Image (cartoon, rainbow, N blue to C red):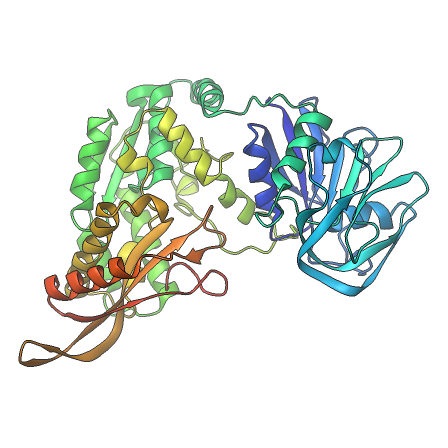
Length: 509
């Protein structure tokens, strides 16, 4: 029962970022759709209303029930949230004469306002709205403005409610973190008890109480999430946790043996299963990316079920679900657009009559890494780049073959090794090589070649929701291209992907 800030989601692309900013203050935050707001418990210290792609004047505009919140708990309305607080309580919101998208200079008109304590005036903020508040109710006080907007922020005189028409959660708002900290710490009175250590302690206690000595199985992938989940569960239940690490034949070079050895060295009760023939056989001739993913998921379930049935008296299935998975898998009634569906191991729990335990479902990816560090997990596991569940299958455009996998593994290893040599690996969120279904003409020595083309991809991100391509040094890129072409037989051309997400994705398939 940590101190909690509720974040009410109206469908903004920035909602997760608000939650992350609050958690950076060591204060726990939860996101709830506007139409599924829980009755706040004693641990809830304040509420933030997010932005939205809707206008408050739309017929289908989100309308929350704030019965148990407004006037009872501190509220910060951001963009749509601020406009809702004005529009629905006697003010007026109209389309802006000048639509404000991007940077603006915000001036504080009430220097005594707690929300803006320590804020420069003017200060740079980030706007993203087509409507503006033109009139506020009688008991509302204007606290700030921009060149184009008279009512850029307000507070309610007789309650702890604030509204701002800019986004403090984004990087472009220079002192946005301070504004959020003022709300969370000064106004809501949160001390900040949400730390990796407190999470570990409370999780171990909860896991013990929930499982009561019963056996748990977990499918390890080699990634950060499943690894941290395994070590946390192992701290709680010891050898009652049984891990299965499946080699799907689509991992990086020597990855299965290397990671399996590390797992055993840190004390996990783990069984390695070489199922590469199952996966590669099922993928034979498949080009469609979605069909690849579904095929890999289906074979994983079959292999995992086969191995799990060899273990007697298992009652629980553990999964490495993290908080973005929970949010993105929200009900269709949620305002947020579902980017992907999160299945983990599909219908396996029902088929095997297992109960689910998800020890990391409250954490964002960066928090998972911090917990892993506090658990003493080696940095070669906690510091790894994200790697797609379907592995190299979705970095081979077109059908997957053993020959293509061998070529891609060699090129990928060179790229990752060179990043580490130049101390660039930790500055990149995710990196890898993509093998294209394209051949190009080249010259090696006195011979004409007609060989494969690969693309190297490196991006910078915070959580993978958005990403920008990494500005790697030109001499580094030149060296990587030269190393790949010289050392990997079958490649004579290397390209660099300079696309951002959106509109592109991090992976190519």
